[in-house]
Length: 187
Image (tube, rainbow, N blue to C red; front, side, top):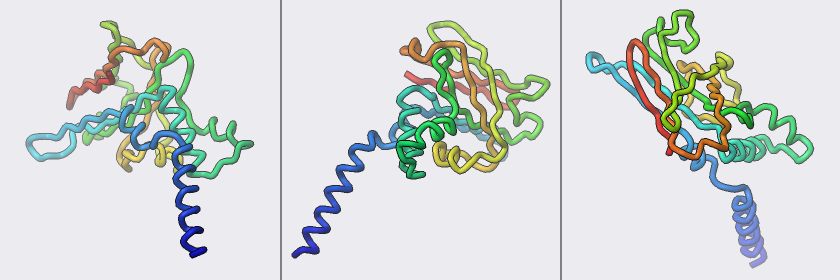
């Protein structure tokens, strides 16, 4: 009987701890991530695979919670854990972007010939990005926070000069290049 009480106690404690952790990270990630996959009709190879996650306040808080949970970070290490998660800036709208194109000559946003065009449409205006290429091999933390990454994709932080607080209306990322065109929309 004592064993049954002990198991019930553990069960209720675990439920209360998981409830206090905030919303499920996967749900928040799904809410703020958009993706588009385009395949060649001739051979069904991937012409374009890309994902973009809007790094707003809700997403960043969920990432902090997920990081603290995964790495068992205590209260004294919170600041150092915050520094490991790039992206949130009070004066810019920031996206984490994963990008893959089968054509090697077209597989980089930052190539010298500017073969890809990426911009943000908001309230009828178009904004040009500042693009920062991230490490070729993402860290375990980045892979934890963005489980849609694969070994072929390149990762970027893409920022626009729009304060996140003003982005309450529909946002659309437009991507066009030599092998495909695509749009991702957040409402």
